[in-house]
Image (tube, rainbow, N blue to C red):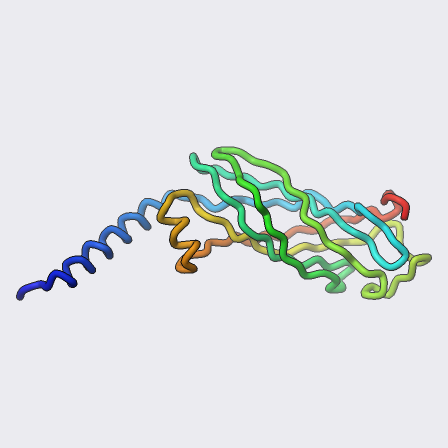
Length: 166
């Protein structure tokens, strides 16, 4: 059986691709922990939140963070869905903290400006798209072949009474 030059090239490309992908097998995805949520702004119709996240990278290469997609609920009511461009890099064998924004309208929770409780339970669920280290990983991400993401979630108590005034 004779192999054409196109078949030979295709086989070499497949082998190179598989070799490159196997090089990624030791890569560990970033770890994301929800630290807390704080009220950053307050108006007569809504509160602005800052969701503080701890991100850790246990790899020997930095990881480029691309985009967060997330949802926030307050006292069990779905209140905010958003995307936020991370525009940051997680250092090799390092960590960093990021604050992701959200806005919650009082009417979504049955609140008015005068009936906002002192505290409420918050829940956050989401995912982060990131670019794994390496030129091939970046090409695969840019072409849409491989867009790795990691999920995260957490909850806590939002202290509204300690928030800034309008």
